[in-house]
Length: 254
Image (cartoon, rainbow, N blue to C red; front, side, top):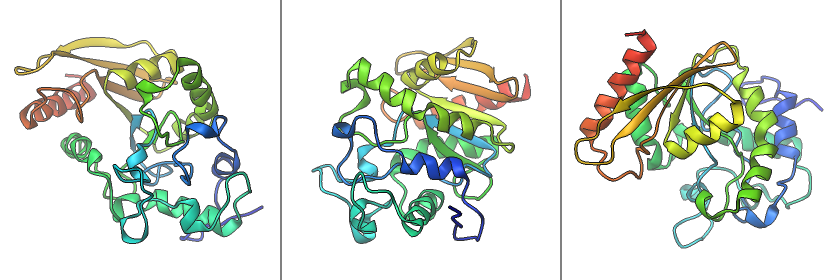
């Protein structure tokens, strides 16, 4: 089966396979959600930011209602007229991928704003093709927060997403992987076996953090920080600016 994207490029078999495989624990899924291969076009991005899994708010509002029409960020089973467990058609696959790759051109969730500030300091952006994209350990959006999911279910979901993330991290354009928050750093370290070097990062009005750096697969620079920019108490705009400059210095080898 050959599928072509909006730009008339052949869709990679790995992407097709990821989209056609069912979630191993469907009861955890946000109803009518679709797999998220990436936020932005990971195939040309030079830097990835990494998360655990897509937020439920990418598909539904805070009352649990499915986002529709102009409020919708990504394709859903409703927008595709698809049924869970029934293979997607070629056109449905195209639409899912187009929605993921064009995510930042439509209505991105504000969660990405603080990461965008880091990227801009480093000379990247989510809003320019070939610059930055966001990927996840798990490509499924879950109803419950990651912290509320059992450890056994977490491992099943991470194992399910491993092959696809490994494929993404082999991208020839990829130079840098950024990890936001202690949970992401710890999960990626377990996932990859990477050896980190640590340095302190002071947050004057909050809990002090660490910055971690290492090399994935002998090629991709990995830098993470234990402070979660979106949720940690005491993380100010000034702290984010200092963190971005610290990351920039690590990249430069200063």
